[in-house]
Length: 298
Image (cartoon, rainbow, N blue to C red; front, side, top):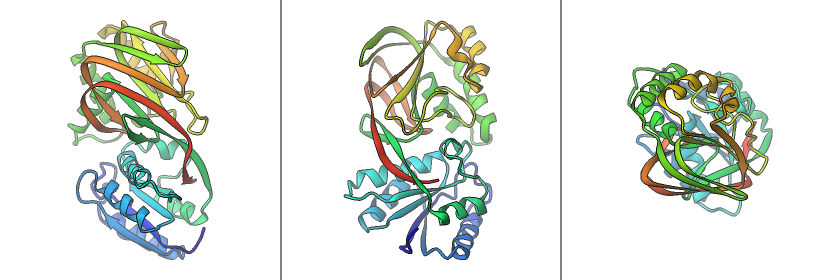
């Protein structure tokens, strides 16, 4: 780790951050104790993290730390990569979200002291980055029912963690009707009714759902799973199995790996990326993977 100043972008409104801005003071103290030179900024509105990360990249910060949940990480990653710098900053993570799926995959500890110590140690690895219609994501994206569940979860702030996602999933299943979609990927295609499509750069989403359990965030491929012809009863049957990846054994669930995927949805769908809604009426959707694009502290 160099002695260059670290930019810390902190989200005090993350649903997993029950202590709010008090945690900002704790993080500042821990980074100071680790002899790190840092500058901490607090986000004040949606997508503010993207703006702050974009400016920090252009200002030449070599390390930008996202202190928040997967949504803030997504904002920061988009800010870094949209700046199109010749040398992108390294991403650091202090997990303060409800799910912390990327941190879990990278074995980044959720307690503040250990997470700050890991940043001070400065060990890094390179990750692939996914793209959906020009928007970057590092963990997971989804359309159809999965995106609808994300939208419903956003409307249930009184619940946190896995419980919130489970309740949103139950509500989503009760409301859903299958979408007609066409999927095209190198070497294959499908056209017909689809319940959901889950696209993973990593293996876990929603704080405990293993929708793409074989995904590896540095193998140069996206994993995707989709359910065909599933009725409401079958979806309810499969829901608990997604908590360990057992849904892949169902004959109506298809699992593939690919560097790219195109999806056409005549009646439109919501798109979620890293737990954030990025489009509400998408009809043409393109996914791709950029291998070894982002350096992250682990």
